[in-house]
Length: 565
Image 1 (cartoon, rainbow, N blue to C red):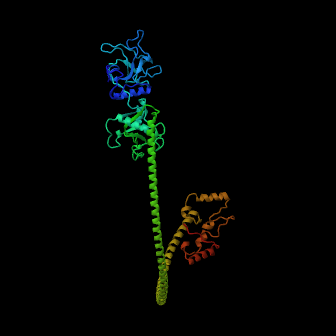
Image 2 (spheres, rainbow, N blue to C red):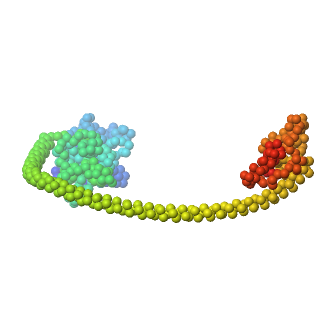
Image 3 (cartoon, helix red, strand yellow):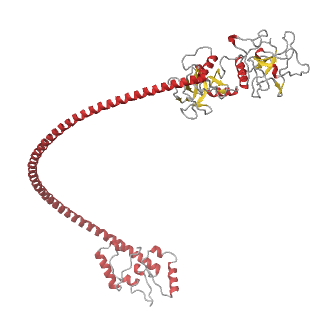
C-alpha cells in the first residue's frame, strides 16, 4: 500500500512503478489481477469504505492543482492536466475509463479534502467491481494521495498468460476464461511456451508435486484433437504451427470405458505437453489477454528458430537412428534368412539322400514282399484246394447218409400215417352210421309230430276260411281286414283277382274263366301223401316222394307250403 508521503511517482520494491494503462485490454488485466488478489469482485463493506475495493494506478493531475475552478460543476476534467507515470500525457485520443452515470462522465471531480486530507483529489484509482450488465473493466475515480489502497505495478515481464490455480475440468476452464473477458490460452511457438512457464511460476509459489502427473503440476490450455483424432489443434480450429514439446511417451491417446479418450491438452509447470481426460480431471488453467497472441520480437524469433532447429536435428538423428536400426534389422533378417536357407538346403539334401535310401529300401522290401506273397498265395491255394476236396467228399458222404436216413424215416412215417388214416376212416364211418341212424330216428319222430300238428292246423283253417287256405301264417290270416282286402279286390277287378305271390307261396288264384286250381280242400282231404317234413329238413328220397305224389294227383303242381312258414 502507498501513502501520501511516498508520492505517485515513487518507486516501489524491485524498482517497479505504478502501472500505466493505455487500453481496455490492459485495464481489464489490471481489474482481474486485483480481483484475483482479493478474492473476486465481492467488496469490502460499501464502495468507499473498504480499502481493498480500490487500487492505485499510475495516473495523476499535474496542472491546475491549487484550486478547483469557480465555475466548475461536479465534473472537473481537462485531458491535458493529467499525466501517466511513464511520462505520457493524456489527450483526447488517450484511453480512459472514468466513472459515469447513465453514460455521462462524473469523475474526476477534484473535491477539496476535509481535516486530515491532503489538499484536493489529484490521483487516480481503479475500482475492483464491474457492472454485471456491461462488458467492461474497472472504472476510475480520483481521490486523495494519502488514502491507503493496494497498488498495481508495471510488470517486469510482459503480461500475456494468466494462470489460475483453481481446479476445473477443461470445459469449465474455457468458460471461466470467457467469463473473465479473456481467452483460453494458446501457445503458438516455443517462445510463448517459455512465457507460459514464466506465468505458471508466478502463479505457484510451492515446488511441483510428486508424482509427475499430479493434477496440480499440469495446466489446461485451449488445445484438443476432438475434431480429428490424433491431430491436435486449438479449440477454435487454428492449427498448432510448431513442434510440440510432448512429455516422454506422450501423447498416447489413452482410452477407458469410464473416462473416454484423452483428447484435451495440459501443459506442465516446466513446459511439456500431455493429452488428458478433459471431462473428468480437474486442474489449474491458463487464460491469455490478447486473442492474437504475442508480438514476436527478435529474441522470440531466435528462441523459436533454435527450438525448431534443435527439434529438426533431433528428428533427423532419430530418423537416422531409426533408419540405421531398420538397416541393421533388415541385415540381421537377411543374414538370418541366408542361414536359414543354407540350413534348409543342407537339410533338404540330407532328406533327399534319406528319401532315396528309403525308396531303395522300400523297393527291395516291395520285391521281397511280392515274392513272399506269391509263394504264400500258392501255398495257401494248394492247401485250400486239398481242404475243399476233403470237405466235398465229407459232404457227399454226409448227404448220402442223410438221404438214406430221410428215406427210411419217410417210409416209416408214411406207413404210420396210412395206418392212422385207415383207423380214423373206420372210426369216422362207424360214427357217421351211428349219427345217420340217430338222425333218421330223430327226423322220423319230428316228422310225425309235424304231420300231426299240420293236420290240426288244416282243420282249423277249414273251419275259419270255409275250405280256403294259404301259405301265409295263421296269425296273419286271423288279422282283421284280410277278407275285406279280398272283397275289395273282387270289386275292383270284377270278380277277377289274383294272388301276385302265387308262384312263390302257391296260394289260391282265381283265374279269368272263374275256375279254381284242379285241387281243392276236398281233394286234399282224400289224397294220400307222405308225412309232412319241412323242405329244408327233407332228405332227397322224401323230397322226391313228396314231389311225385303232388304230380300224380294235382296235375303236376307243387304241394302247398308248410303252414306257418
